[in-house]
Image 1 (tube, rainbow, N blue to C red):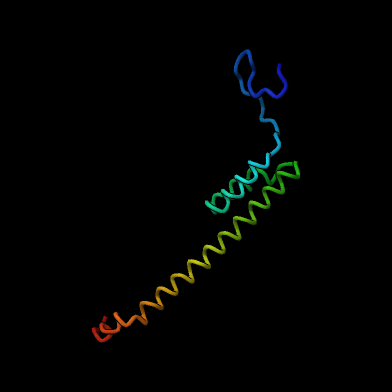
Image 2: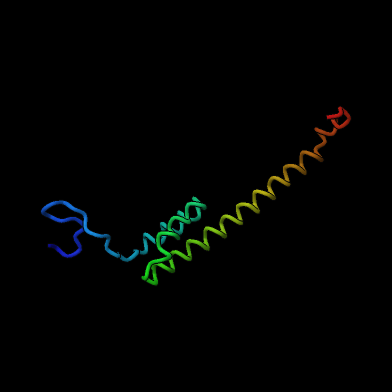
Amino acid sequence: MPEGSLFCPFCGKKFAEQDQPISLRKEIFIYLFDIVLTPLGLIYFFKYFRNSDPIKKRVAYASLIITIVTLVSTVVITANYVKKIQTYYINSPALQQYKNLGL
């Protein structure tokens, strides 16, 4: 059988998953995926953190760190944005004319 085959050439049965290295392109994709779709970055962490390959472990922990940092920064930015909007509308001169309506 040819070296590196994923399927049996005779019956078509899939061989056991081979531990293939992660390319630089795949690493960049994982990191960008973590930033753009923050909570879903945990998929790659759980996929690679128990692997014996040190490069895959490094990718897993980097993915976890990027996910946590992006999630925390998104929450902080959103909270500050909502606070600014509330402050603007509370102090808005256009809304001050309705202050005495009892609402």
